[in-house]
Length: 110
Length: 114
Image (cartoon, rainbow over all chains, first blue to last red):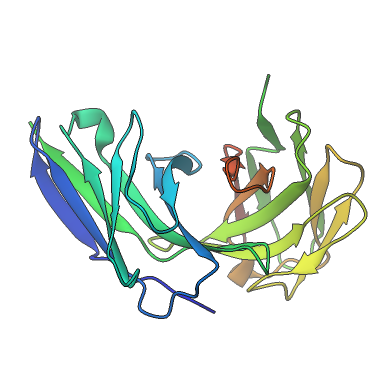
C-alpha cells in the first residue's frame, strides 16, 4: 500500500504563503494525490486533488513533482481559519481506498 | 442537504457492551466508509462499502461489523466493546469518479470504553 510522509507540524505568519510538503515515494501510476484538512473537533474536509499536473482551486494550489514522488500544498495567504491538520492522501482507484497519514498540524501566527 | 449525519455524537460504554453507530448520507453517493481516529493520529479505515450490498475490510476491521442497509445508510457495530476501541469514529461518503472524487465526512462519534 502506498503511504505518505509529512512533517508533524509547521508554523506560518498570517497573510503569508504556506508550503506544506508531502513525500509519497511508493506512489503508483493510478494513485491520485488528495489533500484534506481537519479543523479542531470536526471531520476532515476536502481541499484539492491531482494526478500529474499542478492544480488550482479557490482554497489552494497543488504542485506535483515531475516524478510524482512528492507534492506541495500551497496556501497563498494563510489566515487564522487555516489553522488545522493537513493530510496528504493517496487515492487508490483500483482498491477504492484512501490512505491517511498522520498529517501536518499548521499553526497560523497573528 | 444535511450531508453526512452520524448518531450518536457521544457514547460511553463498559467493556463487553455492544452498540451500533449510525451513519446516513443524502447525496446519493454509492461509496461509504467508516474510519477511526485515535488521539494525535490520522484516520484509519475500518470498513467501506463501494456500493449498496457490498462491504470490504479496511486497515483495522477486527472487532467491528458493518451493514449497508440501503444506499443512504451504513452502520458500524461493536459486538463486545474493548478499551482499545476508545476513539473518534467518522463516517464518510463519496461518488467515485475522476472529477468528482471527494469524500464528505460526518461530524464524528466520540466513543469511550471503560
